[in-house]
Image 1 (spheres, one colour):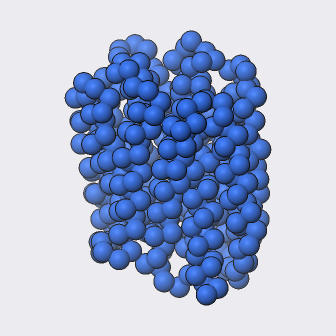
Image 2 (spheres, rainbow, N blue to C red):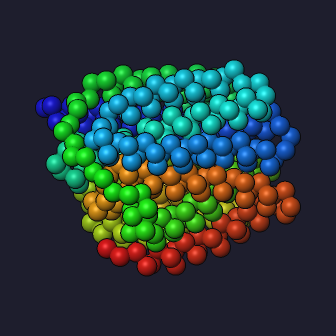
Length: 364
């Protein structure tokens, strides 16, 4: 009963963690553009969050392993996120927005690797880990739907802060486990898993380049309303949630193979998006995004935790995603400024193809 209770608490905390992030994330390009007329500044503002998250995830992930502590970073991360995401509500100029985004990146970076490691360590049945992590996708779904219902770029920040506070309340009931201290140089983990991290970096660079301009393409080019943008993104999260739940019970594939499938099929996502002529045509492509994300995230993160210090390796995994989240928006802003939006799609197709080729070098 206690074990069931712990699993549900982790599911709930994971849900509110990602709901708090996603309700803000999707409409951030729209908010940033309301404060600046420069598409390059929009890209820079979005990138600032991930720049801070890179350093935070790598640092706190390693500290979590060397000190054998998880909950202190999880709880501090939830409280910090509640404060920083809530501060978005009072932003009234682009500089203040940049500073708040940096603070949000630090606090979320503190939370993510410790939360993943705690999830993996919380139960003996590792087949259930994917099911617990699936609430990551369900949280994104709730955040997206919540943003569409709120339909207001300011109200969503207060909702986000409240979601993080609920997550903190749930983590206050989680038990402290006896955790073996793990010491391994960050560089050693990176070298050992270089093909995985490099293919992830390239794939996600292409993806975030597209995510930067996609809300603007949907609203400005195709005239989509905010709730219609939410519908597009819901296709992603519903698919990811279903598949992540199936990972532990129905889909029995090597974790490295899952990762390669996720990277490879991403190419077809952006082929489909490059052919769009109306906002609703993004829905099938976003459903495929959910498929690819479920495979690469579950496959990649669990492979790393099985073969490396858990919080350190997942910290690097999420820092790699964050690095891509810095490069992608800046690249998208540059390409869109000098060329056009469709050129960003072509860039994503090319770089994801290279990522898949590199991923084939990953060993089991």
